[in-house]
Structures are given as structure tokens and as C-alpha cells.
Length: 70
Image 1 (cartoon, rainbow, N blue to C red):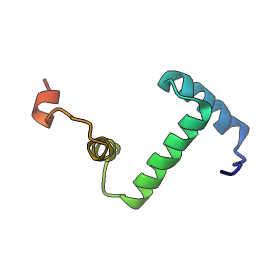
Image 2 (image 1 turned 30 degrees about the vertical axis):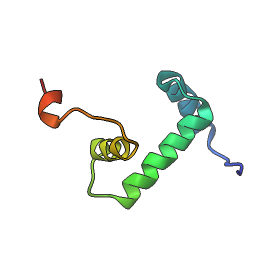
Image 3 (image 1 turned 45 degrees about the vertical axis):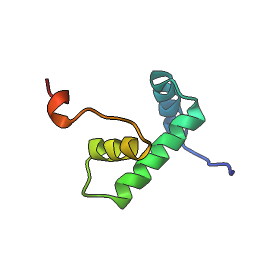
């Protein structure tokens, strides 16, 4: 594990987002890093597609797209 120096404004945004997401500041930063890395390595996928793919890979049962639109 290492130390990452980040801008004060980014840290403030992490703190605010972590409260909304019910995560620690470190967990929020890790989430943003993971999603950012996935977006960079899969540039043709949308954010929603990436989240759905990760949820399915974790074994989460998701409703079919037709059901979620009602």
C-alpha cells in the first residue's frame, strides 16, 4: 500500500461523494480509480455497461433490460 498525493479540491470532492455513497474517503477514491481504469481499458463501453459487467462478474443478479424500463 502506498500514499497518493491529491489536490485539495479533489480530496474535498472525495469527502463529499463518500458521504453520498456511504463509503470511506479511501473506498471512494479506490472506486473512482477502479472505474476510471475500466473506462480507459474499455473505451467503447458506457459507464452503465461497465457497472453491469462488473456486477454480473461478482454474481449479482440483475433484471433484464426490458424489465428495468417499466
